Image (cartoon, rainbow over all chains, first blue to last red):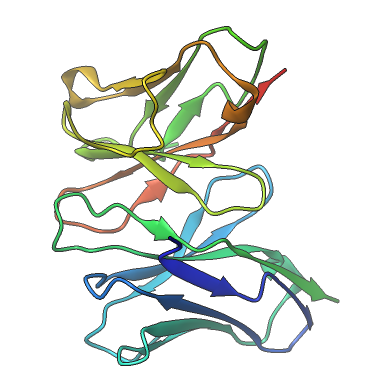
Length: 114
Length: 113
């Protein structure tokens, strides 16, 4: 059972454009939703995270939008740059549980063309 | 470098051999996680330590896998009698208790031939 579904699988955007990646979750106990960026051969790095008490969080060019009723959240990358080309993973966790383990989506390979 | 450190970065082994990986978490992080990532997939949770106690193991962690965290500092993940299906990136992450922000190491890429 895939608890976090991520789309699209791959995305090509022109430099300066907006990249949008979507995720949907099933477990209503999830209350922490981070996005990770991963470059080839590297471990995932935390980009931005949100909790369900807010509908949007912005950090620089990265924005998370959260829809609790639809159990969906998305990452928007404004003014996309070639350096943003990487694989992006959404994840979810239950911070009320004992371990905060992350359940990841399958990832989106983003390519930003110059 | 004060990030999560993993060693080795790459390991090629023959099927049936045993391998051991090491993870050094960020200093003072009492939570340590192991994840496995196969090509084209997101990381999957394997096991979790709080200090030296292993508190949860995924069903993905067969009896050929064992993890330890002596003294609540570094951790080791051992795979016995490796199989080709064990080929993956093994990621370690650490966090502070009561803090959901997990920091990942660069991973150990295992190839079983």
